Length: 305
Image (spheres, one colour):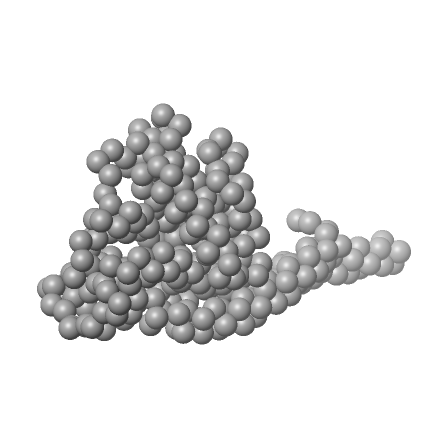
């Protein structure tokens, strides 16, 4: 059995760890509240813009717009992978990295083999993970979530759009965590370019978007377009993708804070259980030491008597 000093040192170490995890839990809880508010403010606009784009496409030929044109050959692909900048968030980063690797192996192995697979990694964890594996990274967005801003979404969108317009890649997909609730996220692989012909609905959109059945069945509300549908589509299409990517960043940020809060809560609970076991071990060791000392004293007294 370890001596009393070793056990006291271990208890002190675990208590310090518990203080850190407890503080991190409270910080993540505060950040999560702010992140949730940002999502709840952003989702309605983003969902409604998706509906408007869907309606406009019924009045024009979207294939005439470069961002809607499907290309016969998918020789090159760009993946936008959204992770966190920091760890200590449970399996948050690991699961999204595994999903990205699975997606690459199952859908884009040919592009990877021909060195026509490109990645934009938003978040330090994803950037460093794929950099070590030798993938072709476009841009550097490490630290994006230290101070999350719409400018980052704008920069990523423009980088993806310019490469798509220049035929550097033929498809662009984004892989991210969608915020479901504090303890759960939906892992999503969604196409950005070309903009899908059908309205794409994530699980959260399915549950929150109004009149989903109406749009699925192809029904539509009459709109008046000024100056005309083609001009509006030309303006809205890039704005639609930028705002979608902004919502994705907010979804990922909230998911990260929720995952970290749960992880730190679990770590704090485990630390409390460990402290209980260590204190029990310490008391038993102390009792044994006292008992041994009493036995030695009694034995010495008997010997003297």
